[in-house]
Image (cartoon, rainbow, N blue to C red):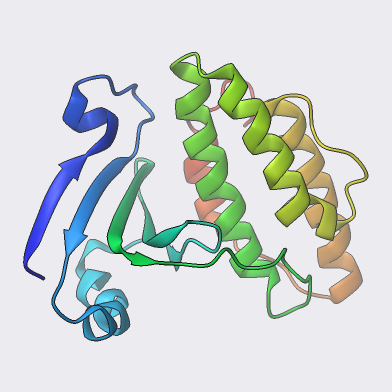
Length: 180
């Protein structure tokens, strides 16, 4: 890594309690850094870590206790958005990680009054994550996304005979009023 710079709402002084920590990362060898991120970040004990499948540049997302969302953005490294999730026993845990990361991020956007962005992102969430789980229509609000996701995940877990760990969910739901 050649440089790491705080960007986004925390750098601008406009963060909410739920805002993520965005860092622009400059590297000489993206492949070497990218393949070592998981082990380099292990001392932080992330609840979840993954590459953002929908970002236009490579973005490594971490969820830490708190909950705290951290995004390591590589603006010089273009990324092609990946297709919608395909639900299987192998993808259900990554889908769950993606949902809770996205949900916490949307919670911060809603807290800062960015309602049009939240609405557009709920449509995107439905296309890429909720519809593959069997949810028939886009949620009209963040709470509807939450409850429809929980119901769909439970049905898919029963159908596939798998259970997604709940630690990340418990952590993120701390910030959502009345969701315990």
